Image 1 (tube, helix red, strand yellow):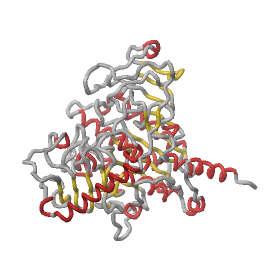
Image 2 (spheres, helix red, strand yellow):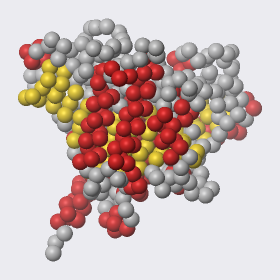
Image 3 (spheres, one colour):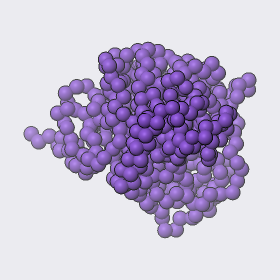
Image 4 (cartoon, helix red, strand yellow):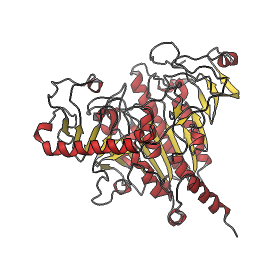
Amino acid sequence: MINFRFFSIAFLFTALGMVPNIANAAESPRPNVIVIFIDDMGYGDVGFNGATVPKTPNLDQMATEGMKFTDFYVGCAVCSGSRTSLMTGCHYQRLSMNPVLFPNSDRGLHPDEVTLADMFKAAGYRTACVGKWHLGHLPPCLPTYQGFDSYWGIPYSNDMWIDPANRIADDVVIREGLTLADMKAGHKAKNVVPILRNEEVIEYPADQTTITRRYTEEAIRFIHQEKEAPFFLYLPHTMVHLPLAVSEAFDNPNKTLITNAIEEVDWSVGEILKSVKAAGIDNNTLIVFTSDNGAAVGSSLPLRARKSSVYDGGIREPTLMWWPGKIPAGSVCAEVAASIDMMPTFSKLCGGTLPKRKIDGKDIWPLMSGAKDATSPHDAYVLMHGPGTVRSGKWKFYPWQEGKGKQNRDTAKWKPSPDPVQLYDTIEDIGETTNIASKHPEVVKRLHAIYDAHVAEINANQRPTCEMERPANALSPERPGGPKKRAVKKK
């Protein structure tokens, strides 16, 4: 009897430029995988990294039951670049992605690139994205063109606006006194964004006070619906990006809005964990929790700087890995790991296959599983974002002078070093306060050469983004005039 499922999966691998390893997929049980990706949450915003305000009991319990990564890096200090790296295992510059896309951007992630969802889908998984996408808001760059069976969420940052080119669902819910005629006439305002289901606008404007709760409900619905088969759930939260918003249950007037928003995200994580346990699939489910970049409003302490910076406060994130019985409970990993590593690591665990084209990530399962003497697979982790940086072992190197440019905004509380480059010992000086480049010229020379070689290799091997499809009669997507970022209060 012909196994048509085998041939359909093999065909999908071939179409994506991948070579299947069906035998490997069948040799061991494959876990469900959930990635929870918070927006703008800082290293110091969580109890498991020492925060006392806000309270994060669910994340702290997840740390008790799983592994905390203390030196986990993302691929960019802002939104779209970071999500590109997570989804593809590639530095975002390799894929020619802009650090931040807007509703008036005309290009997005190329569908020819293999995403995590593509890889999981080809391996026989059900896939869903619930939350903020931000890799292209029109076909063919939406999640449903990138390996996801379904999508529900805000397609970019919540401080943006709607593109009139987005297709409107027949059952669209229109709120705040607006009408369908207003939408068709091109209504848009800053901080007023749509909710999409798959490729259509189903609600406008999104009620941001309910968005964390509704993402959670959609995610739980998917978990229970697909609990009998392997699934991949990507849950990129909108919060705690500005404008901040919380539901009535978390609108505590005695706390700051950022504290309330973080505590609601913590609640959401707790609900996901509860649903996985209630479904009886906790022993076969891997959950990864991290953030896309450093704090915009909250705390990145004890790290230096915040969102947008390549100092550690902008790119070193609060991170947990949870898989009962497979990841040692209450463990801590201080080795360098990164979001680009998710692609090769998940591929190994799910029986998937990596893309034929070059990626930058490495398998970190030995770290996650607590293998004896496991070390970082990165001799050097290089980021070209902004003026650039290199992390190698305990060393953090910057090929530029301290005190120059916006990288130092609100962080230069001490006299900058006159040295033309920067070097910090991240173990002795986690806050990167004392530039010791002049004391270690051999380290500087080695890391500068690594950085230059990385830049040259990326520039020589860039791949294109994809032009998004706009209907011929679509109105302009240009940025509207309107208020600056504001906090959204509950209605």
